[in-house]
Structures are given as C-alpha cells and as structure tokens.
Image 1 (cartoon, rainbow, N blue to C red):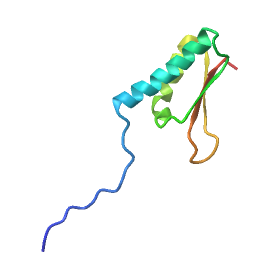
Image 2: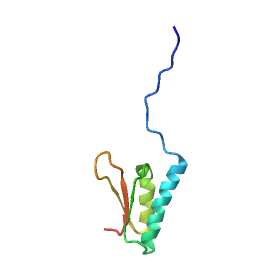
Image 3: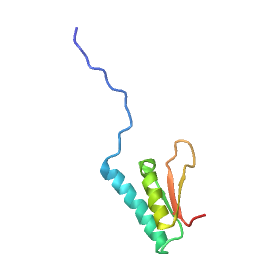
Image 4: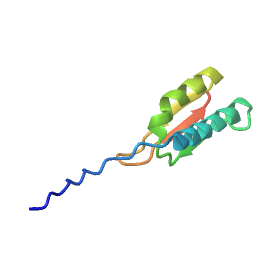
Length: 87
C-alpha cells in the first residue's frame, strides 16, 4: 500500500510584512491628513489586515492626538478604520 501524506486543512495565511507595512502606511497617511487639517475624518475600508495593524495604528493615532475607531458593520463584512477628532 502506498503511503500518502494528509492534506493540511486550509488555514488563513499570515499577512506578509509588506502587507502589514502597507496597511500601517495607509493609516499613518490618514492620521497625517487629520493632523494637518486636510480632512476632518478619514474612513479606510477594505483592509484585509486591519485587525493585525490595529494596535500599532491606534498607538500612532494616540501619539498624534487624533481619534481611532474600528467599525465592523456586519458579520463577515470588511472592517473599517476611522481616524478623526477625539470624541
């Protein structure tokens, strides 16, 4: 009888460092827009790795003196990150 290898159960792939860096750069750009007065509030949507960068993004927003919020509108929906004035 031939030996066969089990097929691993599909797992979500870990985001690459480049994906994390890009997502954090997007949030940092939103923070800069709010800090400079170019925008009152910025809503970033469609981030596949939003939760993975949320902690560091929130810390960056706090250091800049702007508000940071994560919005999950529905189960299975994409997260939105909102950067704006501190409520």
